Amino acid sequence: MTYYARFETIDGHLFRFDTRIYLGKHDASQSGQCVGAIVAKNPGSAKPTQLGVLAPLSLDGDKMLPSVRNRFVAAYQQANVPIPDNAFVQVWNLFYLCNPNLDEACSTINHFSNALVCPSESGAPRAVWFAWGGNDSRLRPFKERFISFPHPSFYYDHHSGEVIKRVPVAEDFAKHPQGLLTGPIVNHLASLLY
Image (cartoon, rainbow, N blue to C red):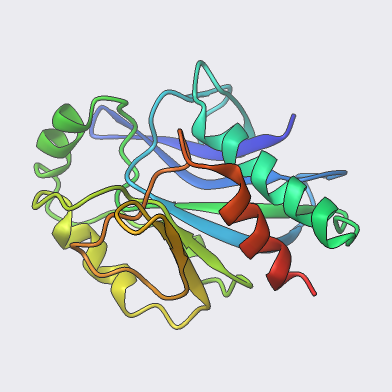
């Protein structure tokens, strides 16, 4: 399996933490090497195979995780750099409640008094790709904790059609990987591998 996460049930709702997209040969029982991270809205369709432990997940129609993996693998190929063993991309979310329906997810997450964040957010990846979509006032409070990230960051700006080399502000349209042109992201990721 290539995709792993730790799912938890909290107050009757499913949450997904420590999501990892392995890029090549791996042993998930080892610590691994985080070669990048992506920040998206919230976990969608993928389902657990186990609860409470880092375990393979079932994609169940999720297209984002394979899309991210394909771009990173293509960047390594373009840069002619071998993928390190146990290399993975960490998936961070504005919030970690699993629900592919954003309206329902936003309504549910507001019932939690404390924002549940993933401990992996304290890591220091080589680069952070922001892909949280457009301006949405419901998501603004969740975006705030990422705005001051000290890590090298970038996003694909939906309006300008360019890779922007900084953390987006809450109003920026950081395009989600689905339907995104492959070339600009792969080119940028490959440039970071030299």
